[in-house]
Every structure is written in structure tokens, then in C-alpha cells.
Image 1 (cartoon, chains in turn cyan, yellow):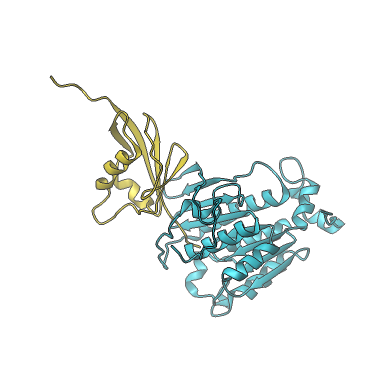
Image 2 (cartoon, rainbow over the protein chains, first blue to last red; image 1 turned 90 degrees about the vertical axis):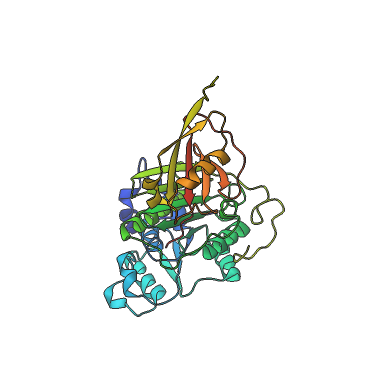
Length: 257
Length: 93
């Protein structure tokens, strides 16, 4: 693959993130040549998308349906009071684009269904799953596995959060962890500081994957409990009978079992 | 003759959606030597406040190794000093 060279202006923009312990010039050009899909772009996905855009990921696609409501503003950093009542995705994309003219931001103004998720996954080099429902997370997981694209799953509840990083087809996928869809509560508790932290760390892992930098967290779950200030790593086990990534994987709907 | 039962200590971490329950259960279980993961979960369940349960979909891991969910997991014999993590799924956005 021929990597797109950095212009002088781009080199100047990214000067603080190129060097020992950060990115190489080649890593930065890999970011430029990459596409990331972020679904959704709220409390976690918003900060994640912002970090990807600012870092110079060449194309960032955000998917988020609906209109901004006042309670979103305790965490959705891409919103503003002026946007309450307006469609989230195009406005969020406009803000993201305003942060970096060297990248392209695309918006999808709804949550993708199975077919569209797969189509988007095939265009992406990494997927950040930041959705509030397991149905959506498992749909993105399935699309990532089918397309052979790495998945960074970021999740949050109250003052806790988790990140799971999947090397599709090689390490445990979300379905290996959750053989049955867990229950879902619409009004999940959330404070913006934790969702922003988890989203930003998910973006860091995506940047490392895309730029081929550092030690990657494939096959592991990281848990942060901000309430008790403790964190853990779990080495995940692939389910040999996983209907999504196992050897006898069959096409399953994210809505079942 | 009373024969003393040898015991071991297993640290317990409840988190994820369960995190607010962590202060209601002991951070350490005393179990007979050779106790299993199932023994530990059976010991833990009645210690959870009566109006709450450990979700069957919660991930269980022992000393950093994923073993499945509360409902479906690999058998595991515990050792003194192990840490049992019960992580109820989280999915907020």
C-alpha cells in the first residue's frame, strides 16, 4: 500500500505527536491513509471521534441518529445548547471538520442496520463501537468480524467503563463474552467525565492500531471503576462455539438469542 | 474429634453495572481449600442485598483470566490469593 505523504502544513500540525514514544512519520502517514468508523458519537464516541480527527485519521465516519436533547449535554461534547432539537450527526460532523481541514469527516444520521454496518465496516480500517445498546454493539461486532476489521468496544455505566479490543477472527469477540444479549436499560446513569475518559482511551487504542504503534490490547478487556478508583485487565477467552467468530460461525442477527 | 477445615482467602471485586454493590459485600471470601468458582459464586450470591442479584450475564474472571459468565463458565478450582472479578455488563454511550 502506498502511503499518502504528509504536506508541510500537516507535518507542522502533528509535530507534537511525532517523535520518540509517540508516532513515527510512517505511523502518521498510516493514520492519514486510514478510515475509522465511530458509532455512535455521543458521550464516548464524541470524544473518541474528536481525538481521531485531531490526530489526523484521514477519514472519520460517525453514525448517530436522532436529535440532540438537553440531557445529552451532560456528556455529549460535540453538542451545544444552540443545537438542542437539531439532528446530531450533521452538526457533530461539522464541528469535527472544523477541527482539522486535513481530514474528511462523514456523517450517517441514523444507526446502521446489519447490511449498512457491514458495508461501512468494509470501508473502515478500525471500528469504534460506542453505542448504548448491546444490540448495536453486537451488530458492529458482527460486521467487524465479517469484514476482518479490528473493533474497539467502549462501554460505560455510571462511574465505570470498559474497553474491549477485538482482532477480528483472531481474538475473542463480543459474542464470545456475551453469548446472550444482556438486558438493557435506556436511562443508563452517566457522568461526562467517565464517558469522555473511556472514549478518549478507546481512540488512543484505535490510533495505535492504525499507526502500528506500541503494545496493542487485542484479546483483552480493560475495566475502570472510577467510583472505587480501581482498574483491571482480563485476558479474554475465545468461545470455540461462538456463533459469530467460531469455526462453525453462522450468520446470526444481533437481536438474538 | 473435630478436624479443622483448611481454608483459603479469595478476594472479590464486583464492578461494571454492579459497582455500587461492592460496598455491600465482603471484599474477601473465606472458602474451604479446593473450593471451586461455583462454590465462590454460591457463597457470594446470598451476600448481595436481597433486592439485587448478580446478573447471569455478568462476566466472571479469576486472577485476570476470563472464564465466562455467571450463568455459563468453565469450571475452575480456586487457589488461596485468587481474585474473583464479577463484572456486570455495561453498555451506556
